[in-house]
Length: 398
Image (cartoon, rainbow, N blue to C red; front, top):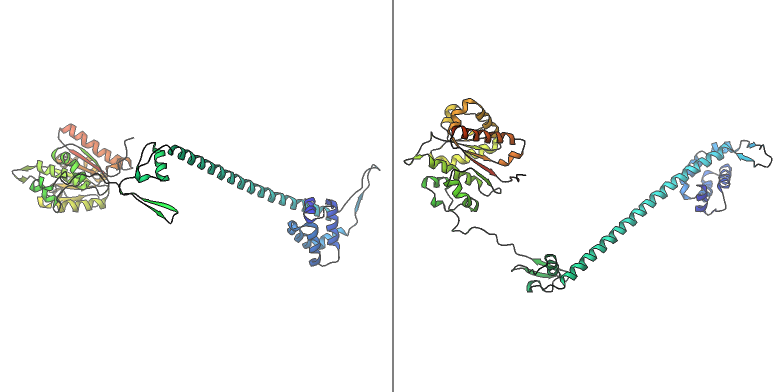
């Protein structure tokens, strides 16, 4: 290490032993600490600044050690060399070796940083080369293709053609503007969404007068409701309706409710004691909201809609006078498990399960039990109980 200090300070002629001797001479001089700092700096260099501080700090101790008699070891062989050493010189040598190790570690770290920078530059160069080759292949592939007038003289259109391998043009109404001669801005109009014509949407007028009471303020069903209208209103089949939030799934469920209402009309009078409808909502808050909504829309038919959850207990008389119960999966599971609920269950003709995708959730076993128990009842009693599932995010079966 002291050899590297010698090279750094310009004293290339000094060896390790000579450097130790020179440092010892400076420390043993009568000069003040401030004056010997310059001399040590010339001998050791800036890299040993910390070592210089330690040497000056223990200068008095080192000076005392160096003033002791030097131990002389007489060789057994007259031709052998004489070894002269002192405790102070050994201490200086040990500290010099520590400083050398510290410098080596710093140099190794700097080498690692330099190597990492070189690798990053090489990766960037290879990535740039790959991009240039890809662009070259695209331009070569696009050179033999023709473009429509909307895409003429456009590198954007050439890339589209090369990617698709066929003739492509931008849609009608596309606007292209060159901004400040730097880049081209292409504005593509949104595609026209396919929708049912106004005449294909089911008008509310086709429903009987009693059913129109549930759709006051509405003139036509929307697209989703019109698609499922025949199955929901004119049949008694089980249904699974998957549509985005806000698509009108509640009105689809209302069509199935109105079908059941129509099945229990006798001479234009609704027999309120012959059927029950159960709407299963995933949360108590939603159950309360749906109960208020259905009560407002079905109240004109004389029907009673009540919330039936753990927080809203109903007496036996209230249950008997209610035509539509809005419950949660856990509450209805408890009701159907009890033998005391057989009279109520025997009157249920329609079960609507909202957010049926919870089958894949921790509460899915409860919904599965409700459906399985309902299907078993249908088989054992040979009665018809319609099941309608509503979901906005139902995943694939697999």
